[in-house]
Amino acid sequence: MRDLEKYKGIIPAFYACYDKDGNVSAQGVRALTDYYIEKGVKGVYVNGSSGECIYQSVEDKKLILENVIEQAKGRLTVIAHVACNNTADSMELARHAQSLHADAIAAIPPIYFRLPEYAIADYWNDISAAAPDTDFIIYNIPQLAGVSLTMSLFEKMRENPRVIGVKNSSMPVQDIQMFKQAAGDSYIIFNGPDEQFISGRAIGAEGAIGGTYGAMPELFLKMDAYVKAGELENACEIQYAVNEIIYKMCSAHGNLYGVIKQILRINEGLDLGGVRKPLPALTEEDQEIAKQAASMIRTAKEAFLH
Image (tube, rainbow, N blue to C red; front, top):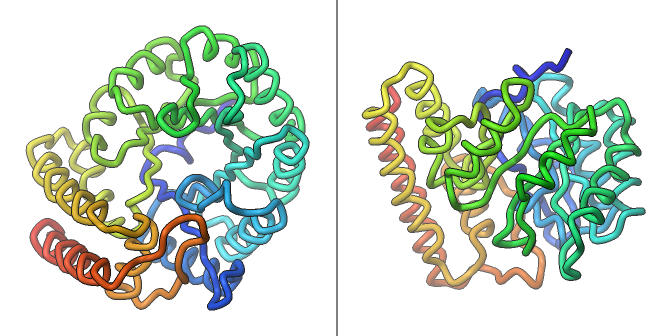
């Protein structure tokens, strides 16, 4: 019997944590893990887009996941994104995640070469076969991967009993409804785009994984509570405020995750380093944007958390 309850809730995408030399910081990873536990989120999504995954080595990813799981000690649902742009490395990371007892693994499709659907299915199934005792989540993010999860490919993947759902980061919120309607209650669909959190939840997503949750987890937890209570007007009010914060963060010259890490320094005292090249670092002007976004988060928390 599938245990989907452990995936239903707010699951921040885990940020890459670096030391002053730009190497993975085990100390930073553990501090960020503690932060999420203290905030009361359901789990974490490790080594995905927000974790700068395509700019990290297999060993980097192993080190991060090991420290998350050791520090969490079962207090968080841990989903490990294991996709690399070749099958062998992806399978190695899948085996590693299972050896650490991660709750699930996830994977985007291979990028760059345009593969036929049967080859994408083979890639995902090979990864899943390397972790036969671990749940598998399809990561659909066509705007970055260049490949969409079609209904026919989703149908094919549901032949794999380890597949439990989709992290849906495509922009049409209707995709969530189509995946949910096709799969039923024995699968879970995660809302991906943070700006559409309540839209995705209203149309069928039972969990949510997002890249900006970590900057303001309390606001997403409150929205989730309002959605569960059927108080959509209150949820919308927070969503509008959250979206304005996201727009502010995205207005920087430097990378969004660099802005978020600066916000966490200001509001939470967390030092997670910068971002890894070729992602652009923050400029001097970006520091003011981060300060403004941090202030907006504090104001929103004062307004909505009661």
